[in-house]
Amino acid sequence: MSKYKRVLIKLSGESLAGNKGFGMDDQAILNIAHVLKNVHEEGVEIAIVVGGGNFWRGRDTDDMDRTTSDNIGMLGTVMNALRVQSALESLDLETRVQTAIKMDEVAEPFIVRKAIRHLEKGRIVIFAAGTGHPYFSTDTTSALRALEIQADAMLMGKTGTDGIYDKDPNKYDDAVKYDKLTYREMLEKNLQVMDAAATSLAKDNEMPVIVFGIDDPNNLIKVIKGEEIGTYVGG
Image 1 (cartoon, one colour):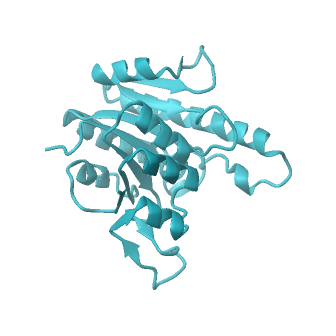
Image 2 (cartoon, helix red, strand yellow):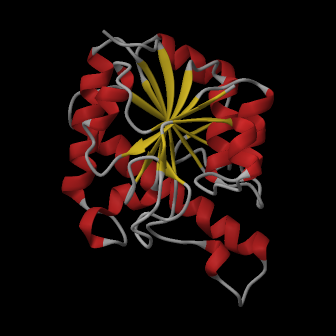
């Protein structure tokens, strides 16, 4: 019943923090892991990019240079990746973590052909440490990795929202939700659900993006089955 054969799922760091708002919430992570297992059992090949916002948001820091701040954020994504890996493996799923920063004692280095081979063998691959370079967000990493592994779609699970709105729905009662958008509209309207670099990368390579609410992890199953929830971004 799955609409997709291979997907790249972007999990925000906040989704791993649950109601704590910071750090890791074991139950929230396990809930997501159970849903990922259900998706995997549908025969879908799953790759994941994890954010690091539950530990570090470099753009909010004024007293250090951007490169150092982004490096700290990348290390935060590695911690999240290892925790998600542990949760998935507790459910008897086979996984691999690949990092863009070389740390051989902790995880594999990112090698695209190896990642694809893992997916073909039914393993869930978790990409950590962003692109390995400062000034690139995990949104941009998600678009890049989705293209590299030839995913059918990039799925962005967001906390605190169920799609893309014209303004923050948590602040404005009159915020209007978009069901569908073009990449150009995303850029022209400056809708910052993902950064411009990620949007441009998806646009130039015609990678479909679906933004949905991950507060209820079961929404992921609905997206995989093709239900029209969240916001679809395409050509």
